[in-house]
Length: 214
Ligand code: O7E
Image (cartoon, rainbow, N blue to C red; front, side, top):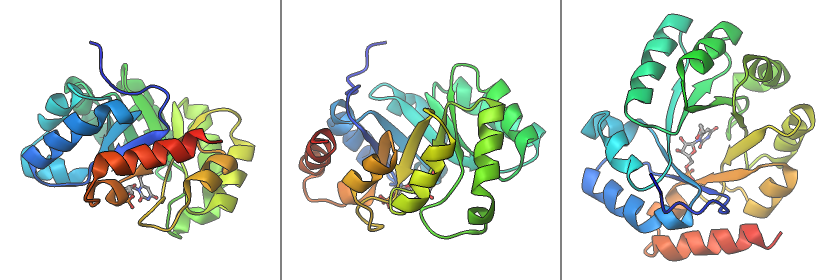
């Protein structure tokens, strides 16, 4: 299926809304400006898992469920998400390599991203290098690292070769798109600065212009 998604955009839109019609409208209007759309629990809890298939008509959908369980439970969730046509899925890495391998194995065609550091300080800060190591060994497609903590992001880039890094924390959480890309992010995840804007298309265009200036 040909999707209108802009392959050269560095923006992943975080569609953190509850309402189906609002979500579909945003996806329709913004799909050709973003690399992918990330959905999290709010829209799934309100509308059920079928919303993934609906949204997949407009863009590549990354399911940000931040899996964090034993291998069998992570596998069950991953297989279910794959049935609804998601392009990608996000797992935590702190649960260890067994769980990560289970997610990668059961993901099928889906790309797996693992969280190795967060946009706010957390206990995983103490082990981010081990999380990168396990993620690479498990064969994930990409890592999640903070755009608003460019020093940390750079450290992660330095130890992770050329694997894709997707980075949240720009805009509402204080991060800056240029410093995040310079520190090694491939794609920037942005939510509130787009969906809360009176002009979401204009907001994305501004972020795209900024990202392509580099
Ligand atoms: O702050 P916003 O509104 O621009 O949204 C940021 C999005 O990135 C939001 O969906 C949030 O759940 C997610 N996120 C973080 O903010 N911090 C993290 O450390 C990790 C994520 C995330 O997306 O993780 C998986 C990619």
